[in-house]
Image 1 (tube, rainbow, N blue to C red):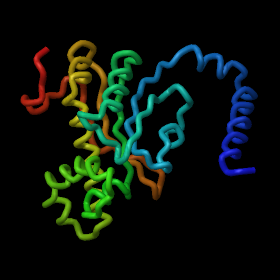
Image 2 (image 1 turned 60 degrees about the horizontal axis):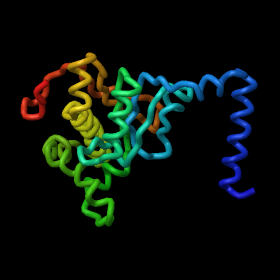
Image 3 (image 1 turned 30 degrees about the vertical axis):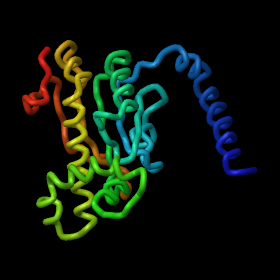
Image 4 (image 1 turned 60 degrees about the vertical axis):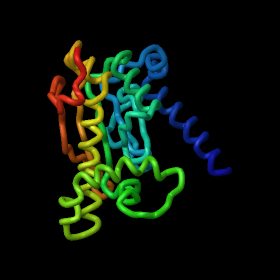
Length: 209
């Protein structure tokens, strides 16, 4: 059996087990999608949203990219955000990074990574904003992990700058925004930042409603 065929076998076994536990599981799942959460996470394969939150299919709407970024020119992200907020009416948006993130590490260095360079520049900007604080830490690992926290915070702020979120705050008093960092070493999530609906940001970024 080839490696990819094992995935298919795993799928068959999983589907059979779901039906064994609950014969109507897939019938319910196919008829509606009503998650309360949008998860914007890192593409790292060690950080699966459902596994680390112990949730079932249908509970979390998921978007993932390198280093869990909210980039205002990323139409993929903006489309997911618009659908989650306006159609699914999610109540919470979670930006979830993880300690030891390779994307953040790469952004702190000067290696030429080709097409990845423009994406990492967004993280480099966060580093530049907070360079004095980050560089003051004793070890490189500490510096990386602090920048990961600061990057999560900045991406939550980027969410608050979008018209999608601001309109939802104005009209519906939702969603709440949360910045979390997951620990690969212990499996625990560290909440680092929250924004309630209607939180004021720099007026430069606030649209007239």
